Structures are given as structure tokens and as C-alpha cells.
Amino acid sequence: MTTLEVRDLVKDFSIRSGLRHSRFRAVDNVSFTLTPGRTVALVGESGSGKSTVARMIARLERPTAGRITATRSDGTRVADRDYRDHVQMVFQDPFASLNPFHTVEHHLARPLKLHGRAKTREETRRLAEELLERVNLTPAADIARRRPHELSGGQRQRVAIARALAPGARVVIADEPVSMLDVSIRLGVLNLLARLQREDDLAVLYITHDLATARHFSDDILVMYRGRVVERGPADEVILNPRHPYTKILAAAAPNPDARDRDRLREALGLEPAGNSTLPGDDPGCTFRDRCPSATDVCARMPEDFEVGYDHYAKCWLRPGEGRDALPAADGTAAGRPA
Ligand SMILES: Nc1ncnc2c1ncn2[C@@H]1O[C@H](COP(=O)(O)OP(=O)(O)OP(=O)(O)O)[C@@H](O)[C@H]1O
Image (tube, rainbow, N blue to C red; front, side):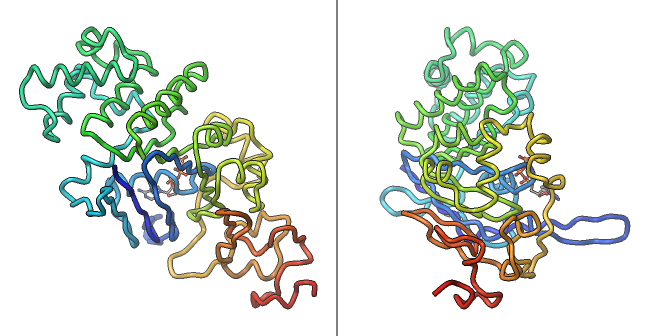
């Protein structure tokens, strides 16, 4: 079993427009832990930084600051060279993630050999077919011989899931794994991920726009807005009892604010297109304050994570059960609150 700890993760990108260079913070001090047998959903609208977090965990992007540590159940830290045996990724696009020139068997044989799980050709074939059966792709021998274009989108995503499990991974990062699939087959793929998670006691990070499936398939939810986690807590709590004004609006825009509905959602939120205004080194205050119906002067300062329920935190100056009048004074003291 493997636990993945993400601490104070930061990613700054430099952007060039003409002769001007500027930097902006796409991920701002994000922390969470993925533990065996649990799913954490990372939700938020397009551009909030979810994929950048996933790409840093998958080591496709180098963090500007912070650390990502994988630990075995005996407490030993997973060395860099073994990291990919433990942590694997399922990408959004099953069409782009498989090589059109290679058979399904080749896609599975490679990680099996690379990570030392199979030595002989026979063993590799047997393990590849076992993996295909586990993801309900049967008859496995027949599927193994096919190339990606001979498979449907759902079947390709199942191959991608089998490939993620091939190295024996115990942590799976699923970045919008069903958003490019036909609506009718999405649940099937999510149910498959949930079954594999139970069977292998996987630690899963499920990245999505869809609050309904986040609630159904996750134990905990993290809500991201402009690079920051603005609310976190048990899935039911966050969806049924949202505390951050942004989560409230997202929850109200549910049931299905998925990729196809992004523009509609943005419109509903009154948000400008994806993009962060957070600059490295600044205290830009609450990044939601320009849209927030409850914002006051104090929101010019960045709020801490306040505990708003059991294991439930919101990065907002508003306290549980308190209204607009109960916000603290601009210096953050409780002076503005009623006696
Ligand atoms: N390589 C890059 N260079 C510059 N900016 C980038 C780069 N990658 C991502 N960004 C920016 O970082 C921000 C966060 O992007 P990210 O893809 O992580 O968001 P997201 O929440 O996953 O959105 P989506 O759901 O659309 O994938 C966006 O403003 C994006 O334009």
C-alpha cells in the first residue's frame, strides 16, 4: 500500500506576450494526502489548476515549491527511481494517450517488463490478458491483438486504466477520466475504477468538473479556485453543506457542470474565462472576492483555512452560521463580529 502526501505545492508559469515576460501562480500552496482505499475528488472550473496538480504528481511538470512524497505502508519512502511503480495516471483523452501504431498487448507489455513484473514472453502475455479481464475487456486474447483505432473510446479508456495498473501502482491519478466519453458509458468506467480501487485498496485522486460523480465516487472533496483549495471536507458535507461562496455557486450550478457545459457554467458564475490573476509573492487576498456576494474589506487579505465542520474547512472569512454582518474587521480581528 502506498500513501501520497502533497505539501504546500506551488507552480508558477512564466508567460510571454510580445517582449513582456510575466509570471503567474497556477497552483498556490496546495496540500492533501491520498490514502489507500480512499478517493479524493479535486473539483473546480476550467483553469483552476487541477491538471497542473495532476501533472506535478505524475512528474510531467516540476513544482516551483512544495513536495510530493510517496510512502509505503511500512513507513519507508518510495525512492525516485521506484516512484512510477507506485503512482500512475489515467488521462482525459483516451484517443491521445494510446499509440495508434501499437497493439493493446504492446501497451501493457511495456510497463509490465519495464517495472519488472514479467520476464518471459509467455508471462507478459498472461499478465496482460489478466489485466484486460480485470477491466472487463474480453475475450482478452482478442482485444490484446487489436490496435487503438479498433476500439471504442470507452474500451480505450479501460486499456489506459489497465496500463496504469500494470506496474502494480497503488496510487492512481485520474484526470477527468470520463469527460471525453459518451455520457452513456461514463458511469461504467467510473464504476470500474471504483471496483478496482476496492479490490486493490488503491489511493485515488479523481479530477472532475462534475460535482455529482465527485460526491458519488469520492470520500473527500477538494474545491479549487484560481490555484487554491478554497474548501475541503467529506464529500457529502461539501456538496450538501457548502461553506465557501464559490462552492455554493458551483453546487447550485450542478447537477452536471461537466466539460461540455463549461461555458454555460462560467456564464452562470459570471466568471471571466479561465485564468489566474495571482502573482507570485503577492497577498492578493481572497481570489474570489471580485465575484463574491459576501465580500467586504477584510477579503483583501488572504483568509486562512477555517474549520467549519468536522474535518471540513473553508478558506473564507465568513464563519459558520454567520452572515455578512458577522465578518471580521479589515485587519482580521474579530472586532467586526457581534458580541
Ligand atoms: N505550460 C503552461 N504554461 C503557461 N500556463 C499554463 C501552462 N499549463 C497550464 N497553464 C495555465 O495554468 C492555469 C491552470 O491550468 P490547468 O490546466 O491546471 O487547469 P484545470 O483546472 O485543469 O483546467 P481544465 O479542466 O480546463 O484542464 C490555466 O490558467 C492555464 O492556462
